[in-house]
Length: 316
Image (cartoon, rainbow, N blue to C red; front, side):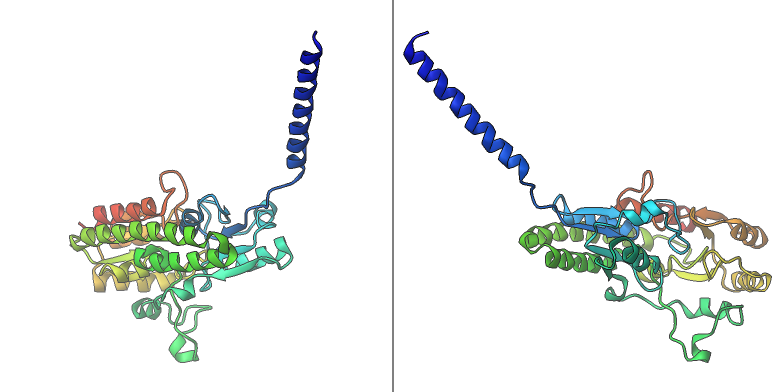
């Protein structure tokens, strides 16, 4: 080997060592971790993850198929919140377990942000409240000086979900200000999709002949209010608590008086009481999933399309 060749080889080896040294130093420096957030229920989670894109890690707390009202978190559900900086909750009494989980998982570091109170939620209809009068554990708001209860299921109205999207955008911008323009742009895309969904739903709803229905619990008040329907009664006024015989008799009387066209159950809740009512009243029974997240309901738009499809069959 010539002296020139040895010199060139030595220079190349030195350059390679330098490159490897730089690479090794780079491996020793960790990139800043992306912010991490969570959302309590699937519809809220879907909006958060779409606004966040790949800039924020987003976890869903309530597993698909679980009931929001009776969720009993497992240790692994709590552990999922250990790194969360912000937790989006519905509020309005629906997911009180979120605050407890966030406290236990993060030692109080995670901030719980309740979206429901900020999107103009509606009151539970008076005709439903009248049915629970004198039921054990149920106080009449106007008699006890208590506020009239509010429906927390705001997400079944895509117009209110547009407002919720703005809330999510602002929260993520404050958490991660360097990506604020991206969150605003992605939020606008979500809102456009929700606006189109609302227009499609309104056109379908205008063709429904039946306007009154009975639901398993109070999940469809906000949807009904938006699209001109009326919830005449609910089978289980307190989710997870078996209705009394006296209450079921009142529901049957309300059905005979108001003439609803169908009863709707939910896959997260035991349908036996609804089956009894449907048989006694001679009404068809349909199932609506108001939460989604499972197979075939893995976007908010698919969730609402399923609700509309079931109502098409029941009310047309």
